[in-house]
Amino acid sequence: MKVKNLRLITLLILLLGAVGLSAQSKKEKKEQMKLVVKELLTSEKYKIYANTAFPMRGRSIPLSSPYALEVRNDSVISYLPYFGRAYSIPYGGGEGLVFKAPLKDYIMEPGKKGSSKIKFSARTAEDKYDFSISVFDNGAASIDVMMQNRQSISFSGEMDTKAAEK
Image (tube, rainbow, N blue to C red; front, side, top):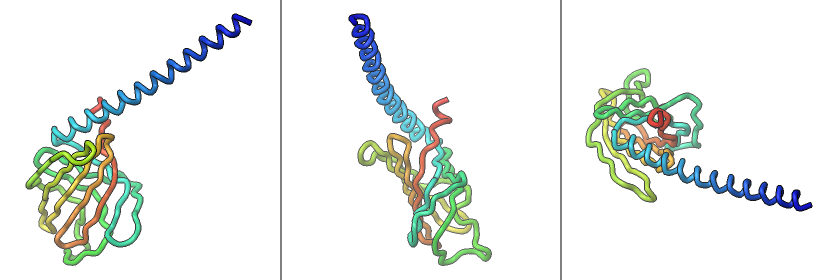
């Protein structure tokens, strides 16, 4: 009987120790993610994958293709869909939010609850785009795009942190 009780107590101690280790590793993973996100933002080389679009009118639209917004030092590469009303666009619909352009007025400042707020502008032959991005410690992000010739649109998604973790 004593052997069974001893085994049971040993098993309980091991289980409690394993739970404590997993809780600690969750904290460590969270801190590591926070550092990776901060490192990517300060390097000004990052990519945000959009998984939901929020047009000004209508419902949110889940996105299945790998739509993304990429910032590379002095330029922005936008591969985002557009849903909404256009006021003045080229014949055939134009390029929408699919372009590569130089960045202007890039500003990054701390936001609420450890987030980072990023604002910048880009201009193509078709339109002028004002971006406002919020990136949180866990890599979640939201993108707001205001344009002169189209209605505004927002996206939610996640920062690509896998490239920085390697």
